[in-house]
Image (cartoon, rainbow, N blue to C red; front, side, top):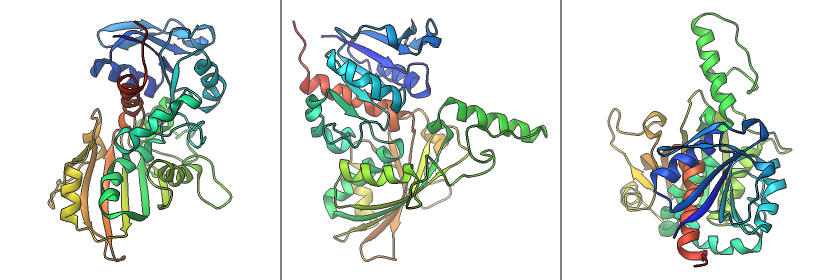
Length: 340
């Protein structure tokens, strides 16, 4: 049985990764359509060993389309996702537009795959923020055993999370420094090359940024509404791959060895944790991989039942494209029926 899939935002970083992963995982698609804005009409999009021509979202008829992978930003999703859903397709949206809507499931398949079954209220399923996705993959198996009370997380987020223009800015600034050209800042509030910026998304009234709020609110919706989360989100001069330093307080005792054993058996997790030089994973090593890598698991002596760990993942994959396609795989295996 084959399905008709459309990717909206196919020319962007995440859209291209969606195309790559659909091909890599041999998703049972009889037809894949690449969609973007009118300015991208005719642009070549790679899909496995094929090349697709990009079509305009505004002119596309979604009748007969089964699943739409949406990666075109909140404004476009807000306008188009309800229209597409009304035409009968299920929208899996990567923007923040629908994440906190009570009628839209917010899903990380390794954590709360059963929530996918609630898609029918609006025919929309939300992908979480990239930094939230990798964190809850690591937290879920530990929460099941010792129950998490509180999480303190500091993120080290790559520029690809802010799009292609952000990646170009890091490259351009880095080159300018080496050839002593002037530094131009367009995408970020300060120089990103050889620097870190403790500011992602807009500031809120309480002093947190919206990115930091997302991590707290989304973790509670996906994992457990009683977990307390405080985050500091930082942009770093890395092209791809988000890293997180996570301190966790549990209700029940759990040792680093127990946590290591639990995470080794957990879906989506890869433990690389040797207490020696290089015995951990960095962003460079996670690029192109599906897993969420976990290292530096150790006791946090500042709380009664505490652990600290280091978590790294390819934000364009698990943080976005892969997560959406995993949702689509569960949709077709458990929930969608295709007419004979």
